[in-house]
Length: 306
Length: 264
Image 1 (spheres, rainbow over the protein chains, first blue to last red):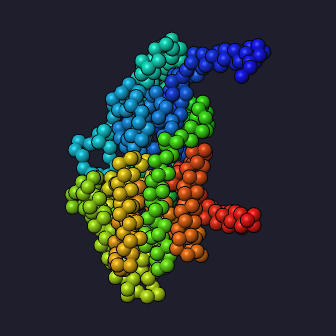
Image 2 (tube, rainbow over the protein chains, first blue to last red; image 1 turned 90 degrees about the horizontal axis):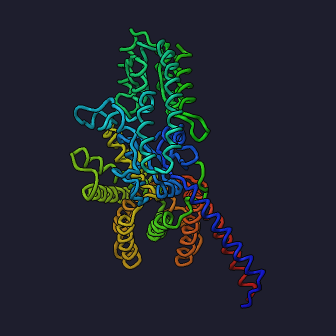
Image 3 (cartoon, chains in turn blue, brown; image 1 turned 45 degrees about the vertical axis):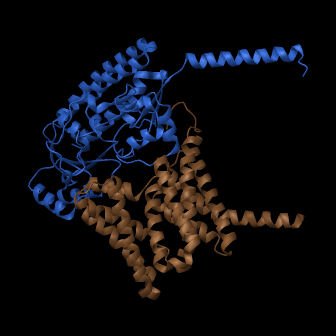
């Protein structure tokens, strides 16, 4: 084959262009983060900015206990450098399967690429002895830890450290982002605490034990849950008991997560006259919401109806 | 869903191939069995058998057995066989009310599980694991196990169909449903059983089996691609693609056939 000089020049140009592109790609190589829940996706994004590519396996309108297998999910898990999940068995129904299927050794439990947020906070509801009859109790305690702003702060510190370990080249960048986040979050917490002052001691009923950490943080008094044991739909005898138990009480509100049906809550509202409040379960990460915007929303809904 | 990355992420042969293989394995038994089910008019028998298999596992669980591993499989297959025996008895006696009685067995088995598991969400999760396999989660050991069972069922069916009698059909059916439901879930099992067989029901044995198999493979492969492309749950998408290919494939094939006949 005859190659004229023009062709050769073109070829060389193409090769060098490709090399340039490859180089710039590798210079901007980002850490792939696979978050099980949107709150951790949002937190990782806040700390990691454009140095992280963040994917959230679930949305705020999904129950993270159960998800359906999608091909993209496995592909994302396979490519992940860091897995950020709640842990405490919240994802026990699907994450072990997904990890086995993805074959990604870097993000297996115990590896630096596996970050379980619940490991970094004090957990409530750790059963003294495990009895399956007590329902959907997690042996490691209540996994919905993101509902307390103090927990977010503790997890943020640990996550910042973990991201830095995995990508030490960008240490300064991560530190700066983290410092900004921490400062802003502490400021917001003061405001939320002021709002929460009016909630202190308020009697409430919740659907599931989803808001345990928020309730503890705000000092609210949970009289009962609509589920007889976590994860089990209310039975008629349980509802009858509730009605009797609560008839003498002054209930400020009935809280449920936006992704569950509000019918049990509405039923109790009719019996007791207390208002029903649907709280967004977590950040709308896919919609571009930040953690503090979400928590602002939660507090406004709680305070607005008191 | 994400920043960065592309929508083609899921379009990865190493993710989709095991799922497609699982589908093909299920089709090899479910197409011939599905034709028989259509012939006998016992459409919902697979749902009933799957539910009875699940009930057996829950009963075993109540007796304190571990729900995983060999014990659960033994409990599932045993109760599926008992269910098959029961339904076989019903078929002989029921006459025109056969389908109604199958439906009733399904509902009774399903609600018996609910009652046994009242107040036990962990048990519920296990039941779900057993009843609703998810096709993307399959691993090679499951595929191997299912392939062996499929092979035995297919050979027995095609070689000894006339000798094993009525009860033989029920036994084969119970065994293959119990295995396939754990692999790909109830919705896909029902669809794989009924839809391809129905699409080819007008034809005689051999062309019908061929056509049904083409419909099935088209449905599974297009379903997996669509679910990868749009990041949707694979099982549900495949069900729809199987239905669509049952409508399209026979038409396309007959057009192709007519065209090539004209050319000759």
